[in-house]
Amino acid sequence: MALRFVDLLAPDREPPTPDVFRYQWAATERYCAELAGEGTEAAHLSCIVRATGEAHRTKDIHSLAPALFAYALYLEQESHFEEAEDALHTMITVGGERLKVSDSISAWMRLGRVRRLQADFANATVAYGEAGRIAQASGDRLSVLLSRIGSCNVLYFEGNLPKAERGWREVLADASLAGYRNAEAWAQHGLGNVLQRRGSVHAGVPHLWRAYELYADDTDQLRVLNDLGIALLAIGDVDGAERACGEVARRDKTGESWTNSMVELLHCASFRRDRVGFERARELCLDHLEEREPNVRADYYLKVGIGLARFGNFKKAEASLRQALEIATAHGLHELTFRTERIMTGLHSCESPDTVELTRAEPRLNSDALREVSASLAALSS
Image (tube, rainbow, N blue to C red):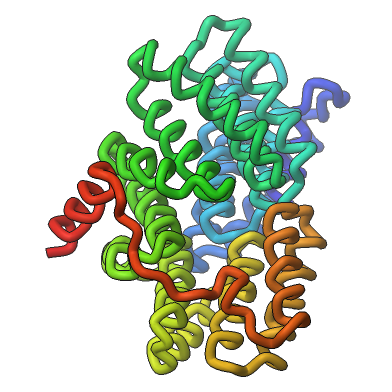
C-alpha cells in the first residue's frame, strides 16, 4: 500500500489533484499508524510515507530515495527478496532521471543483487549492466568496476565458470592498477572461489586469504572465511576448514554467514565420520534454512546427502540429494545441478560413493602459500 502511494509521484502518470493526494496520504498514514509498535518494518513504512508527502510538497524527489533504499535493504536482510525488488523498482521508476546519479547507480546495483539472490540471472545481468552504463557516463570508475563484479557473480552462480574466471582476472588487474582496495578484495574473493570450483583449489586458497586481509568490512570477512573453509576441506585440511568456519559461527550468531558456516561444519563432521557433530549441525541449520536463498538451501541438502551416504544411509542420502537437485534445477543453479547429478550417479552405480566428492584424504599443503594460510588461520582462532 505504501509503495503504491509512492507511485502517485511517477513521472509518467497524470499528477494527482491535491484532494486525491491528501486522501491517499491520510489513508496510508492511518494504515501506518495502525502498525505502530510492530517493529522495524512499520518504522520504514512510516518514513516512506512522510518522505513521499515531503517530495510532493517540495517537488523534490531526492528526499524519497534514502527511505526507499533503506526499506529495500531491510527487506533483503530479512530474505524478502520479491518485496525488496518491488521497493527498488519503485525507486527507479518513480525517481527516473530526477534521481541523483549516485542513487540511481546504487538502486540498479542493489536490484541486480536481489535478482541474483532469487536466481533471476538474466534480469540481474540487465540491472548490473544498467548500473555500469550510468557509471560510465558519469565518469564513476569505481562503480563501473562494481557493476562488472556483479556480473561476474551472476556468471559464477549461473555456472559459467570459465567466463567468470576471465572476468574476475580482468577486474582484479584493473582494481589493483587503480588502487581500489575493496574492489580488489572482491575480485580476489571471486577468483579464489571460481578456481576452487574449477578444481584448482591450491591456486584458489591464497586468493581467498588475500581477500580476507584486504576486506575492511566484518561481513565480507566472514563470507570469505566460510569460502576458505570450503576450499581447505576440498584439499583435506579439515582442521583448517573447521577453524575458518568456526570463526564465522563465533562472530555471526544468526545471519546468513552463520547458516553457511554451519553447513560447512556439518560437512566437516561427516568428513571426519563424526555422526554426533553431523546431526547437531544438521538440526541447527534447519532453524533458519527456509529463509535463505536457493543456493544456500540446495547446498544444505547436497551436503546432508553426502553426509548420510558417508554414514551408510543411502536411501535417505538419495532423497536429500534429490531435494538439492530440485532446488538447483528450479532456480537455474547450473553448477550445483551438475555437481549434484554427478554425486547421485556415484550413489546409483555402487552404493559406495567414496570416489565422488566423499573420500577422506590427508591434507595436501604442498606449497609455502598454503602452509602460510593454515598457520594464519591457527593464529586467528587461538
